[in-house]
Image 1 (cartoon, rainbow, N blue to C red):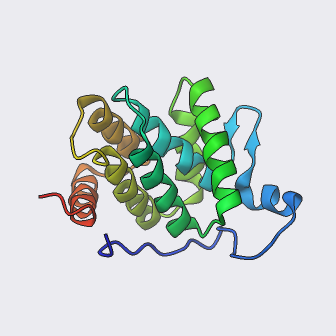
Image 2 (cartoon, rainbow, N blue to C red):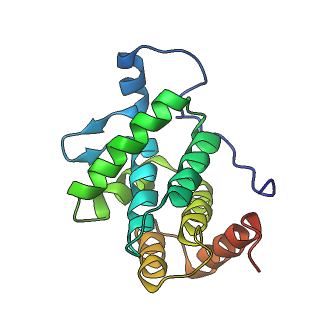
Image 3 (cartoon, helix red, strand yellow):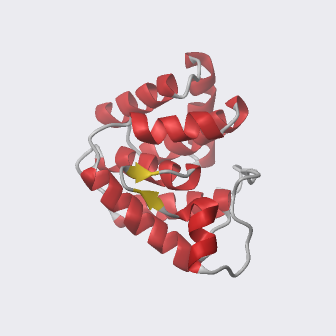
Length: 165
């Protein structure tokens, strides 16, 4: 799994002790209609993808948590809070547009492609490609304005990261 190294984005919280208010200001808080910060939106999107096959197990949750921790530099407490809030947002959400809009507006094209690599890792977390998850990944790529070719490259990189042939 060491094949995938993600760069931290400039809007990400730095690794330091911060107050609850500072964490909210850095984007670790949800707005009334769902995640408002890119970190929370990415977490909700990954969880939405993981639950589509009808099974959201510990291995998928651990993979999502690892991806978020590595990519966004979150401490354990912040990460667990983010996971719980994002799971709740997914349970209450009926659309992808809110999550993807936040990401499209906050990330560069290169960063969105990197996010797609992470999303494809979630799709393949259980070692299988499920139709609903694959469909979601394709819809997300469209909403993030990622061409099919670049999404395909992201998918191949995700398979390499997970050592899946």
